Length: 224
Ligand code: DX5
Ligand code: ZN
Image (cartoon, rainbow, N blue to C red):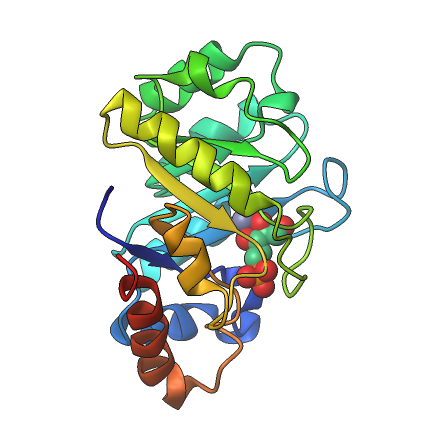
């Protein structure tokens, strides 16, 4: 199991003051920023492109930027996001006709690779990804919007993915995305997740970030 990572989703940030809000939440103790890219086609919402990622880097954000692509088509946006300063790029395999080629393309662009499983997509592809990816991302809501309710059946998938990653013996991260909150953090951690996307952190008052992040981290780490 990898050290715990907390990655607030900028979807819930103060978008008119994005750089300032990201700097504040990083200073308050999170590890990465999670950057949700939506195209109003693969998912019914529209968000940010590579220029926003680049703007965060130019503003001075040095923390890892974890890009979650919810796009179709998608491969043509990998190089622009890498050039804009993405650290990792996660993709939904249903969007590519060649999963290995997309993985190779992300690697060729010097980014870490994540593969995403929607809530109702079984883990059938996972065994074939051994040794090829840095992160497995389990969606615990249907992608598209922040602030949705956590789907508890995904905890079974988390346990299954944890078991497989442990059998691999690799440093692959297990990430969860959607509806994570203070109350379910401990159950999610017990299921073997080490990387937590969390929109709710950005929905706190800015002067409460530090306290809420500390409490969230202790809920995650308590059962470990
Ligand atoms: C959902 C996105 C998530 C979302 C999470 O489509 O992929 O990253 O922002 O937000 P919360 O934590 O509010 O569910
Ligand atoms: Zn996401």
